[in-house]
Image 1 (tube, rainbow over the protein chains, first blue to last red):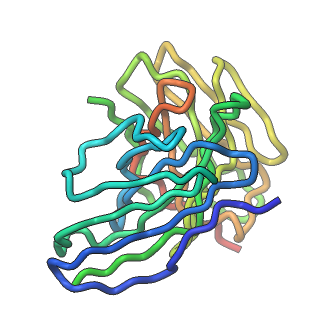
Image 2 (image 1 turned 30 degrees about the vertical axis):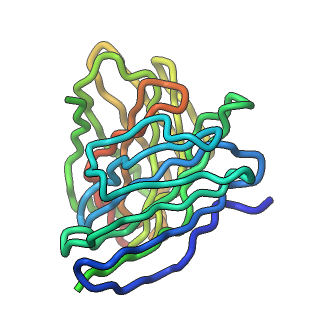
Amino acid sequence: DAGVTQSPTHLIKTRGQQVTLRCSPKSGHDTVSWYQQALGQGPQFIFQYYEEEERQRGNFPDRFSGHQFPNYSSELNVNALLLGDSALYLCASSSRVSFSYEQYFGPGTRLTVT
Amino acid sequence: QKEVEQNSGPLSVPEGAIASLNCTYSDRGSQSFFWYRQYSGKSPELIMFIYSNGDKEDGRFTAQLNKASQYVSLLIRDSQPSDSATYLCAVNWGGNTPLVFGKGTRLSVIA
């Protein structure tokens, strides 16, 4: 049973650049949520995708956008990168259709903005 | 604004002892409660969830929920050095609503 996968593992970008992070949910899951975890903090909710639409959004600027594909995988895009965007980006999957709402995290993508 | 509070620690316990981790939350509308374990440099791993008042046991772990006091705890019996990690408490409104996390409590189990 494949768990949540994310790519890439690590990424180094320069201020002002754009980045795309990818996530494949756990087998049988249809909902993907993205979180940002700064050093020493708990994860903070960015947004959630279900049925290829953004369903809920946290307190993040429009520079953060996403997409969900028909196979339930998802992308997180961040434009005009700032130094403060350096963090661990986590994808979590869950299942709405089977009422299995526990969220399971992938290994994360460590983004460093220089 | 929903807040989840945890003591940052570190909480140090000897091997074989019971570790007690605590969490309070501000939103009385919170419905579901989760404990995640996060090793340094890794992602959070779900270890327990609880929806109803009372205790829920899974192996060496027991989650306790008191909605009247807005308090969740995690007990780890027979603590092992491999339990040394940061434990994150998270709550939501039920269903697929977003998780709100505390900052985590760092646990150190001393051999």
